[in-house]
Amino acid sequence: MAVTRQGRVSVWVQIADDLRAKIADGTLGAGAQIPTEAELTAQYGVARATVRQALSSLVNEGLIVPRAPRGYFVRHRKPIYYRPQTEFRPQPKTPEMDRFMAEHSAEGRKPRQTIEVGILAPPAVVMERLNLSDGEMAVVRRRVRYLDGEPFNLNDSYYRLDLVQGTEIMYPVDIARGANQVLAEQGYPQVRALDEIYVRMPTPEEAQRLELPPGTPVACHICTGFCPDGTPVRVVVNILPGDRHVLVYERDGMTVDGND
Amino acid sequence: MAVTRQGRVSVWVQIADDLRAKIADGTLGAGAQIPTEAELTAQYGVARATVRQALSSLVNEGLIVPRAPRGYFVRHRKPIYYRPQTEFRPQPKTPEMDRFMAEHSAEGRKPRQTIEVGILAPPAVVMERLNLSDGEMAVVRRRVRYLDGEPFNLNDSYYRLDLVQGTEIMYPVDIARGANQVLAEQGYPQVRALDEIYVRMPTPEEAQRLELPPGTPVACHICTGFCPDGTPVRVVVNILPGDRHVLVYERDGMTVDGND
DNA sequence: GAGTGGTCTAGACCACGTA
DNA sequence: ACGTGGTCTAGACCACTCG
Image (cartoon, rainbow over all chains, first blue to last red; front, side, top):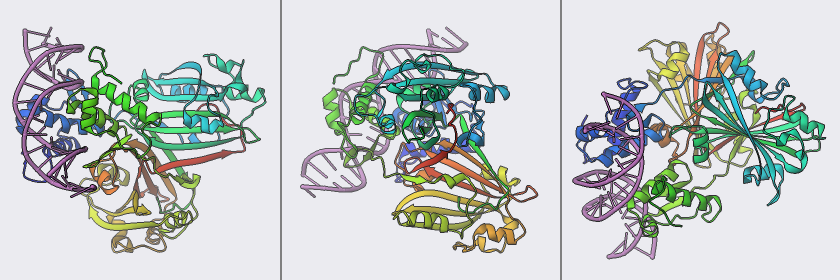
């Protein structure tokens, strides 16, 4: 495949299109090594920087991943983890950790999670939802959840400091009866929740904590829990890497609508 | 802010971090212009390519957008469109177009959609779900939906050619009673659906059709509709740009679970 | 016409893993 | 020791928009 400098399509785009086609049609299958930068430079007769621009565009599309000093490789579509439809519906009440652990243990995976606790001025997104003013502090319980040794998601729960002062929530240990039970015992049972889900690129910090390859977007799921009187008492920020999650829903026993 | 060549952090990362911090703390607010490449080159005392690498990393994070030959600008967090919780639940049966049009007209937006129809060998993802063998063709109805003139999502519906041959589905017109009604009249009512949602970077074609700025991931929502006998008759591939959609769910009247 | 980002070239040195 | 990608430099020409 030759490139041309005459058209309005830049050379690096032609190279990227060429490689993308080879990945799409299986000429370069999952896990295969892309020709080295030196080889591509010779093959297309261009400067190294031009080849690198083509490669970096494929990296940012999530198609390939650089593994210096080995080479570039076609990205594996990872074994995909399904989340059941119960995700955004009422849940059976279970002790903390158990839902994540039990669900995935049953599937033969090895779940694990780390917990850190801190007191800090929360990010704006959390402040708004907890009705905190500038300077007010919150308690955060940060979890990183792993499956088979690979980071699977981030789960940061924020609480108003005044509501959890002195409770187990402030210590980095599993709470067998669940953090929500502790909140309820303090007089703040949660009876309503608002879930917001959107999609974006990860921050560098998120990419590091989740060991994300470049070109991997995340779904951000923010859950706000409310007391009966409408006070928000808890905000959970859940970060789901796009290459490790597929949400699956089933709709049954009805006429399926045509518009989505 | 000065850069150093001694640390293990590369210069372009330091520049990117510096600019990212200025965006985060509002020094560079939404819509603000970033200093030009020439200015940054002088300011940090580095080569242009180094500045460009820092800028391109911010572009790929979706933080800034280049608008040649004007400059780089902090990306607007667009006015956000909410999708109601009915999204993945049984829908009131409405004529085709009406749900999308009615929902958004009610919110004071101007919805519009284009429809193209084609016969083609569908992508692998669709072939698997329609149980098509190599070479079998499908009918696709491709919609681009716009709100206030901006592309909002892609909605491609695939049908087995043998099931819709000769019906209105093969013509690029609105079908008042809905494409599913037509299928039902042909003897293929849909009574079950499987929804799969995941997150990835757009293909170049999707980015073009949706006019996506670089650094914008998409949610891919694949809906497969089944007959009572289990035959898949219809696959809808829905592409939702991450910068234009927030899904919102409410959970009510229960004790909120602690694990997401 | 001046200034912008977009593209491309031709070099250089480095850290790192593998052979 | 060698080859890999990662980083950085110093140039060049272009198309485009704006004043």
